[in-house]
Length: 170
Image (cartoon, rainbow, N blue to C red; front, side, top):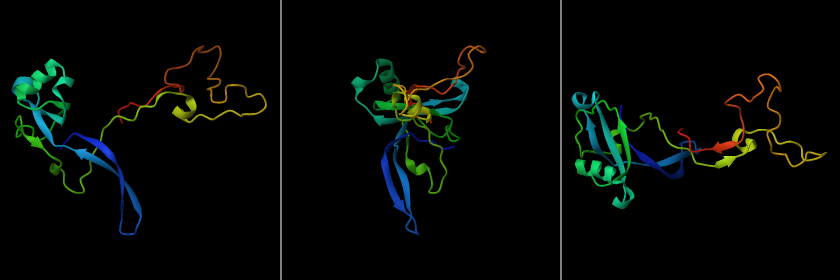
């Protein structure tokens, strides 16, 4: 397994040989520095902790700074641990770059979705909008009835409804 930390820079487009437009996401992947090395003797498993993106010292807590100073690494914004196959070969201070991946490699990308705050059921779950004529009242984008009255006498967890949207790991 190979791994690297990156951040989305933006979107662009490329054209294939038939002239079709393909949307692409531009990602700044690395360089990442090995901040900590987990060993089977000390920690019970083998892994490495990678750091990405330099940050001002004042924006980190003293424990975070101490952890990074112990490794002799400049302050980093993101720290993530990866269970790599070549974890034993890497040492603290080594730099991992995007060239660890070859052209055509399939990759799994994990990130945090864009936050939208508190949203209604229409935007959040695609619920239908009620009619705007014949006494629809001031509830055109509201939820409506959700189920039986007596049994179970409540709304089950997980029901579509208004609430916080976004800022989810995807």
